[in-house]
Amino acid sequence: MNAAQEIREGKTYIGIEFGSTRIKAVLIGSDHSPLAAGTHDWENQLDNGIWTYSLDAVRAGLQSCFADLMQKTMQQYGTALTKTAGIGISAMMHGYLVFDAQDRLLVPFRTWRNTMTGQAADSLTEAFHFNIPQRWSIAHLYQAILNKEEHVSEIAFMTTLAGYVHYLLTGRKVIGIGDASGIFPIDPKTGSYDAAMCETFGTLTKGTAFSQKLTDIMPEIVPVGQSAGTLTAEGAKLLDPTGTFEAGILFCPPEGDAQTGMAATNSVTPRTGNVSAGTSIFAMIVLEQSLKNVYREIDIVTTPSGDPVAMVHCNNCSSDLDAWVAMFGGLLKKAGADMPKGRLYDLLYDLAAQGDPDCGGIISYNYYAGEQITELTSGRPLLMRRPDSPFTIENLMRSLVYSCMATLKIGMDILRDAEQVALEKIYAHGGLFKTPVATQPILAAMLGTDVTLMESAGEGGAWGIALLAAYMGRSNAGESFADYLNNRVFAGRSGISESPRRTDTEGLKTYMADYRSGLSAERAAAES
Image (cartoon, rainbow, N blue to C red):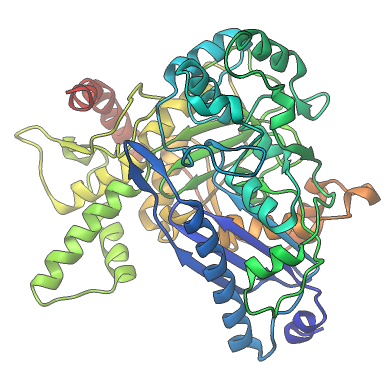
């Protein structure tokens, strides 16, 4: 069956993901290959010290992205996109979205990027004997309770961005288990929110303005492979105001971007993992057994199937590097040598690959926001060098690339050295790896293991959530999601692998020693 016929007959699947700088919709065929994609660029705002996106921007971005997908489909295949076999919604994990009984937003959306819940995260980690990062929804809720914020008594529903968009389109307050694991800890035996920890939370909040039962305000968890609702008439009108796209289409459970990244890289089984790098960077390592200790640098979340995952999440990745590239582009434009953005990145990454393995002593800190792993409550991008450092464009660019991954390495070293977590495969995806000449070998050296880029990695999490939509119904036939990916999606797909290079590894030892030593200067800059 050709693509146009599949589109007309609704035998395709759609995945929509809300990333930090781009909303993307991908249409895939029955062979799981992408057919068309629509995008919408957006940015968070720092509003009264809080990183946020407005709900108007969420709705407008959804419509713009979907309209672009419909237009691209018509242009490429000469047929209108009116229906599909399944849809999935994905978005940035964590954060704080709370509504009252009339679905009114109580406070502006507090995204994962905020580091304002230190007291709550510390208290909950101690009470649960389980690491609760500042980004998690429960940390935001408890901090609001501790701060005696007026809205807490009115909370009727708390969800993630993916859960919210799913609710807009289907009317159902549900979530996938992976995204749920960034709201509140999951009991791996039951696949539900940990009942004992929910009880502990009730004890902690007794006598406060928050009198609700915690499980009543969190979204219901729907297992992978099951339907999580259908597109309502109101949802169809929101998605496509022209009325071309039909209501009644099945939705899979909404998931977090970490889980869709795992799906998109086929890293959902033990001893596998993936690194996603864009505005933030995080590693997801599927565990064979529980960690022996609790680490503040390591989150325990789940795969889309509910298996435990060690997550090393860093708030900061490419923002500082992007700012330097934009400045160089501005200089070229002023000099009358305007260069397309993609070509400029290629050029600068090539120069980074030529830099000294230790960057000549040039140390870069990419902290736009706070970072729990390095104990920073706020960020200050910072560049340091010794007077005798060879300050070349090659060394500068290499240091900027290093800085994107340096904090991740600090967390990953704990898994490798303290917990002896074994790794066989690491897959990389995200904007940082679109030009892999410098970035892929550096990540291999950072992690001390082979790193593979799949040919499909460029489609990212939007493709990953489309795969989860395509998996709907398969679990009822006894086919696991891991088997589905191995046998039906990735069979025959190729990738490019890079092994750690000795010179990179040795240079990184020197760089990281200086990086750790210089963190005191970064902290001083943030504090003062």
